[in-house]
Image 1 (cartoon, rainbow, N blue to C red):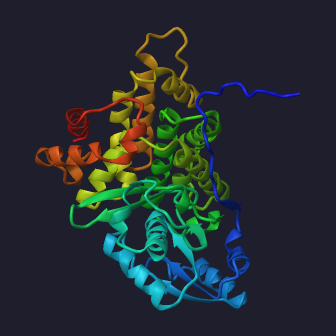
Image 2: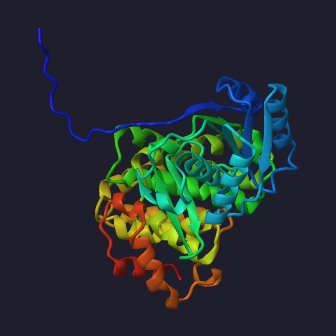
Image 3: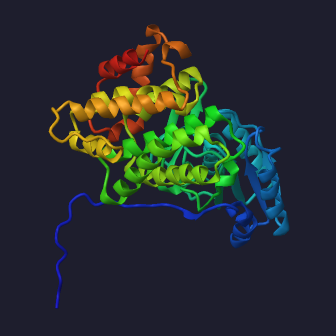
Length: 390
């Protein structure tokens, strides 16, 4: 008997790496390197990590598997294009065959850039945009040390173009790491401000994925779960930084948010944050935090039911209330969360002035993340949102 497949709308794919989540997963680094049958790996990290006890344990795990390694740690926050190219040189000169990225979003994004150029040649800026990469990357094992960026599970890498002073987005399933070893213990040595910024980054990942025009049932479940965890547990973690259970919950939320946004993509908050962070060299999570409430206000009219669901998930009861109530309460709770984790500032206080806004808005309008925003925003409308955030 012949069966006909019924027409299905909104076809979606869902891609993630092999993930090992939990305390102690970092000790599996050497085993996974062995699985790829490589002789030497490039460890990409930053100078703030190489003295951490858990980084030394990762190195020992690789050594115990009789695999050589070299460390490339010349990575700044908001990784620069020239740092990627220096990393490519280190990879080639040391005849490496795989990459192990250890750290926050900066080392992980830099590692992806190194892998892209090592296999595809040229310059990292040649690959800006969506699906511009042809050849597969070398084996990639990622170990995140922050709960927020989710570069370890995503098809994104963000690199600073130092000539134009803007962050570029490179998006391709080819750059999803092969393995993510997500160990909450690696986050125990990060400070309060970084914990707050990366946690808010994870929240924006989840919220933008949920309202993205590329959302699906596959991404929605992860996005909503992450949102609930972060609203509930991030302020508590900052009050109790030694609480391992809270730290694990936020790491888990970050992972779930990563699953969601890697497949549903993002929106205007990230497009604007990339422009802002590239020009001003500000922490990415801080930029997202200061823009989120304003973008919710602008996007709400396009997908009110989606935002109402988010509001409901974080405890807003809008039954019997007027139409504007869920929007107002969602924005209010978002602001309350930001302030409760210590991000009580605005764009003016971090150095932005009105003269910069036309440039910021133009770069944001050209960012790939804007393609999946639920509402089409003009350059002028993006500029107005920056003004609101001053």
